Amino acid sequence: MSTEAAMTQLLRTFELVDSVRIAQSALTPSGVIGLPDFHRWFARRRDREAMDVRRIAFDEMRLWSTDAGTGNLVHDSGKFFSVQGLSVEVSAGPVKQWSQPILNQPEVGILGILVKEIGGVLHCLMQAKAEPGNTDLVQLSPTVQATRSNYTGVHRGKAVPYLEYFRDTAHRRVLADVLQSEQGSWFYRKRNRNMIVEVTDDIEVLDGFCWVTVGQLHSLLGEHDLVNMDARTVLSCLPFSSAGIASTSTSGADDFETAVMRSFSEDYGSLHSAGDVLSWITDARTENTVRTTPTPLAETTRWHRSDDAIGHESGLFFQIVAVDVRAGNREVGGWTQPMIRPCGTGLIAFLVKRVAGVLHVLVNARVEPGYLDIIELAPTVQCDPRNYTEEARPRFLDDVENAPASAIRFDTILSEEGGRFYHAQNRYLVVEVDAGAHVQVPSDFRWLTVHQLTALIRHSHYVNVQARSLVACLHSLSCSRPGAAR
Image (cartoon, rainbow, N blue to C red; front, top):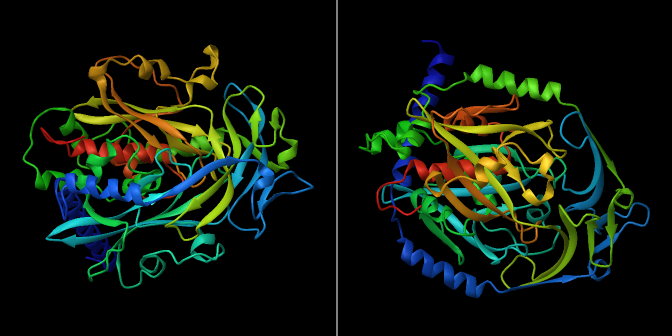
């Protein structure tokens, strides 16, 4: 065996070992603390993480100003992010040209989860963290959730706890490390480093942090607005495999959960080969033309500014607003900032079906102006239905909205990133369609297995943040058992 082949075999062995350990943790509903104790701890954290957030006028912001030449909202340091305009031209879709405000945050932040075996079971160190845009303020967050400006001290606040484990990984086991995009309609080419790092030494559990198993996280994903977006995207990067689940599970039933489990395994077939999927994505990136030009915020057409909001003349889509934040337990005790405020609750859904006992999800090769590489794979449906006329309603929206309760496999309200978005909530759904039903699939949609999606998540700029959230939710369904919380 060549050295290269031996190394490949060794890496596959490590991946299988990791998948078994992750599966064991996913099937462990009680770890260092049980879920009832977790909820008591989390309720106490919500009481203690006092944060007062109020809307203010733009001219009341401190250290932020409106650039006289462009109308852009900028920070005095030149760091963090700015609100600017973007002119967009696309070759496909009901609207071919428009302009809009967009957040420009060129720096790369870190979203990281520390994991450690405790009592032979892998645990994740999670944080109860308040963000000004969260409806309930405090959500369950990764160990580290920090912009580069934050962790390099531009805000002149306290140091970010546990950051050193992610800045220096030379002597630690890294389970995942990949640059991922964020909302392509609201961010211009925004990326964060998604990391999962294992520690073996004892570390101090600081106030506001808690060890939980992967199984507990999966249970919490089904709860209303509890697990934040940053935690969900990192969880989607776990090297999950049904080979690991199968080695820890005796289930042989031909039910939905088993179909999900099989969908995580490369040992089961799919409707499209890996090469075909990559070729389809490349074709989509080649055939779709997207021209984006950063412009002065003051020159965006059909967007109007008042003292305290920038909004579209139709009253749809989103607004730019300003907030004043007073926080007791953050790196900085108080600040002001602009935020994006959506005008409604969105709908994000996967249609799924079983093919020969293997679950497939219907993904969309979606164009968004803020993507670095034109398209990323998105959920079947990703929209706020109120933003569309009857003639321009997104494909498969009716299938999701009219689905019977018996077909809905996952359904909860989850928030988007609360550091930049104000009360941005979406209803996340997984809806099963009958395997025998004929579903006409347009060229920009494909049925993929979850294994194919998770393999693409291991690389940058293939799967968007909304689809990654739904993949994390599918992780939880793959480990469902009778009586287990969803």
